[in-house]
Amino acid sequence: MSLSSFDLLLSAIAITAIMMLGTTNIGTNLRLYALHSLLIAAATAWLGQTRHEPALFLVAAIFALVKAGFVPWFLNSIIRQVGGHSDSGAFIPTALSMPVGIALLGANNVLAQRLPTVINGDGGNIGETFALSLITTGMLLMLTRNIAVNQVIGFLVIENGIYLFSQTQTQGMPMALEMGILLDLLVAVMIAGILLFRIKKNFEHIDISKLTELKD
Amino acid sequence: MNNTSWLAYIALTAAIVVVPPLLIGFIRKTKARLQNRVGAPYHQPLLDLIKLLSKGELVSEHASWVLRGAAIANVSIALLLAVTSPWIPGMPRPFDVDIFLFIYLFALMRFFSVLSALDTASPFGGFAAGRDLTLAVLVEPAVMLCLTALAVVAQTANLSEIFSFTGKALSVQAGLWVMAGCGLYLSSLVELSRMPADDPTTHLELTMVHEAMILENSGPNLALTEYATALKLLVLMGVSGQCFLHAFAAVWQTSPSMQTACGAGAVLLAVAVTALIEATGVKLRWTKLPEFIAYAITFGLLCLVVALGVVK
Image (cartoon, rainbow over all chains, first blue to last red; front, top):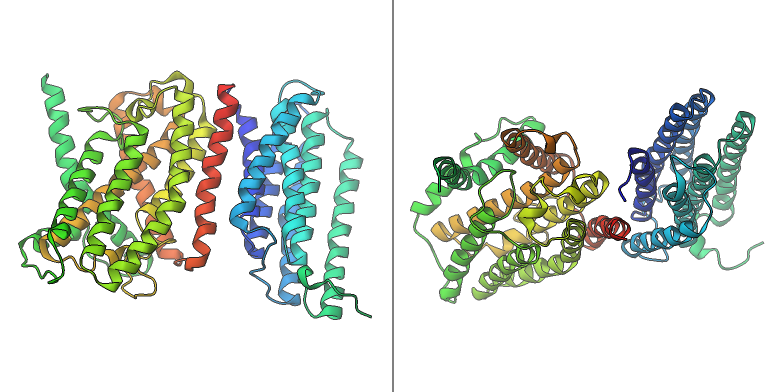
């Protein structure tokens, strides 16, 4: 078995997600997320090329604009306004959570062998493995981080995983659906931003490890 | 032995003597240029070594023969590594080296450095030895995993064979090579006491690791120690540079002389990246270092996952 160029691109996507587990610095995390989304946009464009679907180029362009441009910028500006929690903690030490991410990648590979592949050609089992690994990596990010912004980033990684899964395992979704999901995501990120402001206003911090007692 | 192989051996010997100090000079020059300084000429470390060799030395009265013996042992091991390990494609091989021998020759060098640091009974040597060994424990799994993954795919533990451009199983694994290259490069930064782990220019007791270990050396002894470090730089940067080279399918189809030229370019590029990191980055806080090394281990584990997938 050897990985094709497209599989290598997919593995780079999964690796950037695992790298996100390795740092608690939110600025670095957002930069990695931008790179990660850019790679997914590249993979979408690649699929558009191999499947001769020009619509996918448009999807890739909007995807890159929204997820690699707007979302990281928006979250970064929120972080700057809410207060510089540049170095937040984690429930699992970051040095340990990366190997956990890789173990999950291996488990996902076993799982992907059992799942039926819908289409042949690009993607297939390897695509399933990496897409599922994004979902588990995002869950790990959401579960183990102290600062509330990381929960948003984890959610976005999960969302990217679902998107990648749908792209590699089906012949592609209708364009309107893709745009709708992107719009949903945009709204979700904005609502999360407003929520962060509210949490900050009520509790004077956004550290979820301290959100253990109820307050009026 | 025919004529060309004699020439190759002479070229290798000349390269091993001259190139390592020049690489150190290259790092310093690049760093200086990036910081808007003129910097010392490229051959300055070579001149420094010659000057140190002709100087007298001052040895602590508590030191024993171990201080001198460890420096000599380190240079011998470093020379052995430079002659046998494949830091540039197409170099002559007097005999082959195993991946485990490769890893443990480095560990042996570390053992002798620690021994010489403890021998003088200075507190600096003591704490630096402790720090150095802490880093060694953390970084060894990364090197081990990367090289073992390559060996498993190549079906041989012979390091020269793995890096020989002839193995069919490895030549298609571009992803594996890149991951192994990243892992080996990050761990060589730690192994060589380079920037994110240790600042080679600092002499502040809070931050020194490698510098504090060689603090008690002077004169010819210091020259030997620095030369051994420079040789280590050549070998480790060479090996991790070769990994990236192997990822390009075009390289292993060209002529051997072209491969050697590309290999030299890869070594220079790896060293230049090191200089870039040193000029732009900062030394990490000691408690943050395990997180940095975790990246190297992550690449090692990824190599292992790929290797397991390939072999199955």
